[in-house]
Each structure stands twice: as C-alpha cells, then as structure tokens.
Length: 597
Image 1: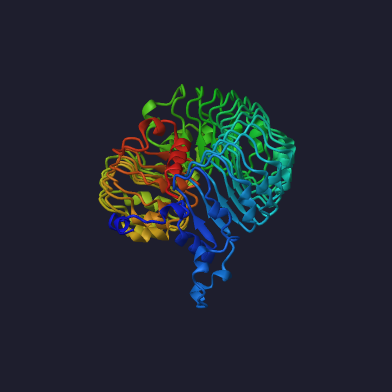
Image 2: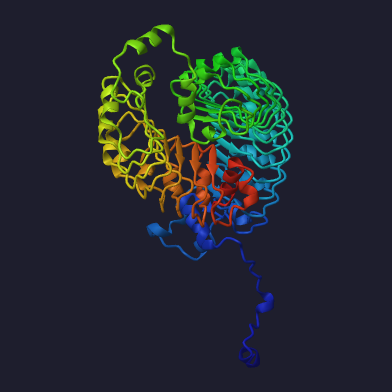
C-alpha cells in the first residue's frame, strides 16, 4: 500500500466510475437555470449535449451535496429554459429530446449542417423565433407547421425543394425568409399568412407565383429577385400595403401591371423588357424609385411624365436612342441614370455632369408657346440679358448660373428671382470660394442646390437655414467637414460630396434620418460606423468608393434599407474583389455572414 501511495497511484482507481467531460460546464448549466438562457454558439459541437435537453428535468449534481436554504442556492426554484442559441456549430441532427424543453421561445440553429429536423419540434408550442438559415435542409417536418406562436422563421441558404401545404397554419408569422434555396413552386396556403410584413423569395427556381399571394395585404416588402419568372399575376395589385417589390434577374418581357396604391419602389433590372406600355406606367401612382437597368428598352414614352412622384429613374444599359424633352418636367426627379445607352443628340460629357444639368438641357429643348414668346419680346431687358435667362427663372422656377468661371453671383440674378418661388439653384462650375448669402432670400421654396465644381473650403452655416432643401450637390470642392447645423435640414434626402477632402464620414450625416442617398466617393474616408448608419432607415444609396477604408465592418450588412453600396477602390482585403464585383446584395450577404454571434 505504501508503495502505491509513494508512486502517486489510487488503489481504488479501478473501482471508481470514470467521469466524462461535458461540452457544457456545470457553471453554465446553473447560470442557465437561473436566467432561462443558454448560449452555446460557436463551440464546434457535433451534437447537443444530453445535459442541455435535460436541463430542467435532472436535479443538479450540486444539490446532492448542498442542502443550504440560502436564496442563491435554491436550485429547486430554477427558471425554465426559454432561449437556446446553438448557431455556428457542426450539428448534423437535432434529437427528439428537444421536446424536453417545451417552453422555448427562441431556438437558434443557423450556420450548422442540419439536413433534417425532428418531428418533436412541433411540441415546442411556445416557440416564437426559429432560426434555421445556412444549413442543408431539404424539407420541413409537417409538425413544425403547428407552432401557432411562431412570429419569425429564417430558412435562407438551405436546399429546400418544396414546402409543406400546412405552412399556411403559421398565421402569426410576420417575417419569412426563403431565399437561396431550390424552390420551384410555392403552396397556395402561403396566402393564409396574413400577418406577414416581409417575404423574401429571391435566389430560387420559381417560374410563377401563386395568385393567393394577393391575400397578403400586410406585406410591405416582397423580394422575388433571381428566379425564372416570366409573368407577375395582376392579382398582386391587391397587396394594399406593398411598398417595395424586387423582380431583378428574371425573365420578364413586360413591366408588370400593378396598380398597388402604396408601391414606392419597383426593381425590374436584368430582365428582357423591350418596351414600356402606357397602361403599366399609369398604374404606378405612388412610385418614387423605378429601376429598369439592364433590359432592352428602346423607347421612353412621353407618358413617363405622368409619374409625378418619381425621384429616381435608373435606365442604365438599355437601347434608348432618344430622350423625350418632357422628361425634364417631372417635378420630383432627382436622379436619372442613363449610362450604357446609345443616345443620340446628347453630348457624352453632358451625361457625366449629373442629373440636374441633364434635366436643364432637356428643359432647354422644350419650345415656348407663342404667348410666352411674345412676353419675352416685350419684357424689359436686363443690363446683362445675355447672362440671365428670365424665362428659366419665371417659368421653370430654376435659377441657373453655371459654367461662368465666376468668383461671385451677380446681384441682378437674385433680383429677378425675388418672389418667383425658385425651387432649383445651379451655380456649378464656377470659382466660388463661399456660398452666396443671398440664397437665404429663396429659403421658403428652395429645394435643390448644385454648387459642384467650385472652390469651396467650408460649407457656410447659412445653408442650414434653407429648411426646404431636399437635394444638395457639393461635389468637386475642397471641403473637409460639414457644419453641425446641417442636421436642421430635416427634409434632406440626397447629398453629393464626391471629390472633396473628407478624411472621415461626416459626423452630422449620422443624425439626418431623412437621408436616402449619400455619395462620398473619391475622398480620404478611412472609417464608417455601421451602428449609426443602421439608424438611417431610409438610406438606400451609399457611395464610399475610392477612399482609404482598410476595414469593412460586418455590421454594415445589417443596414437593411441599402440597395446600392459602392466600395470599390478601397484598400481593404475583405470582402474580396470578386464578391464586390457581384454587387450590393452579395456584399451585404457576405458581411452578414461574418457577424460574430
């Protein structure tokens, strides 16, 4: 015996039961019993430990050794597990023992290797959130469709080929993401999900949509991009709440006829549309953004001017040869994209000068009616009549003094503009070093300013008193910062700051929640705060190309409103250039996949 002790050996070792190490420590289990939450994400688990399933059934081992009645030790007063996070592991299956956790409200299994789900999942009747994205699921158990309290389910990035007809029983779902699967059809019962607000069907193999989708009267966003759709059912016009519809990368030959009263954004780029018909255009009574890029459109009909609410029109890479001059009469159009069209009669350099100058050119092609021409002949001429276009000011409410290489704006220009309710000012391509103070005289009506291609070194705080401003163009100047008072421009939707000297993302822009477009390319920006960008809930276009960004934060992928993100020309290593080249959707998806759980 003494020899054994000297050797450091246990004489009873062969009679003792060997303890197996659990992947979850007793401390974590005890903490979960108190909080009702257990996070096992990113542990490299190949299976869920049995201790986890039996968390609220088995008596803790410590209880056999601890009979204390202190409050902190009352193990019998444990809380049932309600939140179980198992994401980013290597789970290949889920045991039927999941039924032993009947009060779970959140179950996160995303980013695993699950190819199937147990029928016992249907016994978790309290479940509200079920995350199954980035797995290898080929089907869903019918029993899962009995989860009446389920509000959100994510199923993107799986291998689903079909959905159970019983899916319509999940009547409390508000969000359903089925993107990046192999679905060739959808069950008609999908129309029974009347609480849905967001439905994502992109990157599947759908050739048609069920007419029952018309019953989804609360859906605000429907994404059917990257499918094989040749037609869109007219019944979708009954989706009264629909605001955003994505139909990119399909096989559509006509613009869908959708008189949906709330539809603000329609994306039909990368289809086979050859002509725009009047009937389809006149349906879009509330449209603000219309994307028609990468189609085969040859003619832009005059009826496009009926879209009075249109602010952004993307016609990039079509076959358009002529533009109707009446396009310039669209009262709210701020962004017009025409690159990649064989346009005739318009100088190529004019297309690179921006929307305001192109619209100004088109306005110049509109012939004056005889009465207005007579008025022009009898009107008293100004001292510098050659420099001041009175008709542009009085009829088009546009004050233009551009390409003069002038160091200041003549007072007579402002004198003519007095009491004319001018809405647009274009002082671009001059030598201005300060912003004209007399702009304040136009503050009651002024909504659009172009001060690009000047020599401004600072943005005068007086501009921040133009409270009706919607669009401001400050490109190609020498600006390094923006005044904090600019946050007072609560209607500002678009700001262009390309080719300046910004070394960081302007702090004040994070505070302007109305912003939809921020162009900050070709500066020296080295950092952007995604947590503050997320609060800009209307931001759809963000240009950060050709800056000094060494790192793209993954949380930028959570900016759900972004539809166009430009990052090329920065020195970051990830995402790789191949991913950036695939476009905004691919970049955002990649960034989301990199967010640590």
